[in-house]
Image (cartoon, rainbow, N blue to C red; front, side):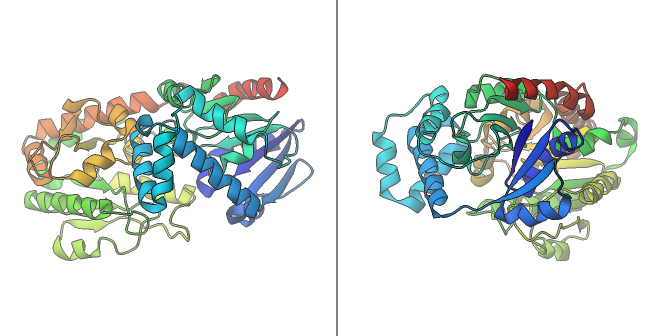
Length: 439
């Protein structure tokens, strides 16, 4: 059986590597790795080609670039703005950058229901696309950057969920024959927003390092520690390199308020930059607060694409070992930390009037549903309150600090850790994939 695996980015490579390694050692499969120009050499260096594993480069010529823009344009004008908060923000930015035409057509074109959007785009592009795959069996990782390429008749598409926010951001722009999601609730999200019929609870590959290294811990050690001995870690969600508008500056303001508050109580704070963060973003804070240290910067050449290597994950694990409580706004690191059994203090700005950029950034379906849904577990920044005031209110009550962070982490851990191992999940899903490909 010939299987084509489309690799668009290093981030997608993280999730697809499990499937490549699984199939390439089984003689009945022949793998064709279709790589975009930006990642082709990386994949060639990673794998040794043979009769059962062939690497091909996809060149997006002018024709395909036009198709890509047309595909995105059609999705933009047929999708209701209230599809998701992310899509609404996307439309708002497009109106600024693309001017009157997009805005005009978005108003006059009849909007499609969720179940019609991907089908409509697919039905348009299946008539005009001419890219020839080796065989008809395709595996991709969400979110697909060039979905027009797989809007073709006779293709059988298996989509592997790469991130927990992908089901709800935007229409996928193609139809999947099988979708493999992290867990049941995220499979339900995919059903709700993408309307594919065959959605299966699989395994959170992106979190496999933390699942394999998960720990058990008790509350006693944290309750016994005086507040000036507790070390906090703040997981940064933005960077000066890849955040437009005022969100990065707004988060810097929140970070400084946390620094100032913890300094007052004698507690240490570690700032964990984004994997693709800019070196030096927080140097000015180091000069102001002696209780502050900066975690590891990952040296990446591309600010929007990076590989979470085992070495980098071990560095993040070491940073978690050095702290007692993680403070989170909107990052996946809250899930990583929870799996590792580290208490997480989740800040909630959904009612705040003083932090508009942060409130807007948190107003995303996946964050509201999974991180901000149990208010008593969050540190809620009320309408006129400041971060400093609310952090202080929690810190002065040690039991409240511990209970909030531990209960939040426990609930998140129970939600995400699968019952089966990755190996067992792969064996189970192989049959489902074969059924799709042989249908």
